[in-house]
Image (tube, rainbow, N blue to C red; front, top):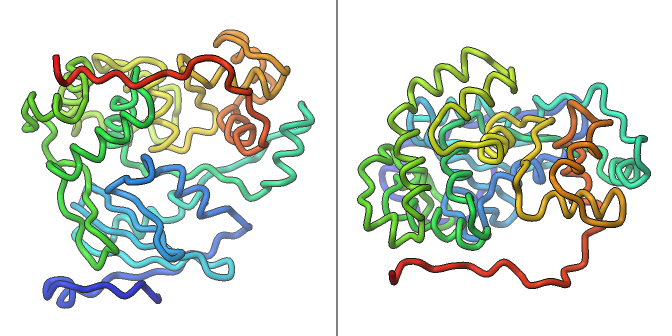
Amino acid sequence: MVMPAVSESPATRDSPPRETEYRPREPIDVARAIAFQQRGAHDPAQMSVGGVIWRASRTPQGVATLAVRVQRGAVRAAAWGPGAGWVLDQLPGLCGGRDDPEGFDPSAHPLVAAAHHRFPALRLGRTDLVFDALASAVFEQKVTGLQAFGAWRWILTRFGERAPGPTPRSMFAPPADWQRIPSWSWHRAGVEPPQSRTVTAAARRRSSLERAVAAVADDAAAIDRLLRSLPGVGAWTSAEARIRACGDPDAVSVGDYHLAHEVGFALTGHRVDDDAMVELLAPWAGHRQRVIRLLGLSGVHEPRRGARLHPEDHRSR
């Protein structure tokens, strides 16, 4: 696998990568499936450089760096670190290869049908890392994406683990022990106490949560109940975590600041509330997240006329 030229440490040279090639049985948009996992333009755990997508993950076997390149329908991947085997085994899921669009009928609305025609290879990727997806979703509770991504970057670069391998620039996997992050560091990152308490409380139950999720396999309703049993985790946070970790094709992030407005405008020409959005998406039960993703790619978006949601900075208080 041809990788960008970078300087390598002796440890990297002594530990060559594990490599694999994945050939999907049908055309899938691998780059789009993986790109959805990136938390902002400066995410220290994921980046794309020179046609190669790099990811740093904390797997059940340890930290791993994954480099992915799509070439002529094949997905070539190399991985470094203790978790290298795990991320290579999980590669088809990350690429969208485990997403099954069987039963999806885009014809219920002309815009959905047109978007599906333009993006027939759209698939929903998954990381199978439930806790890290949950933590990143909690960071996004009640703040702008810009604030959440900045906080994610601040915490990972200071408390995460340096990614192994010849990464184009320094990358970091999520922390091993979220409970050891001091309160003033959460404050410096811009994460409010309710969110930091939610993450640290969930971290105390991380092992049991991950075992419980693995036991119910892909039962989205059961996973939703498990996630929402955690203090501070509601419908929106559960949906966001399931979308990224499980590739849930039916998850709807009810309570999102913009989502109902965007879905309503795309499907009816005017904004709607959450209840009306759920009703509009009912014809695609089982594939509502797929429809939301297609609507996002359709190019039809509500004009922004009102005041934007401005970031609030409480760190000086």
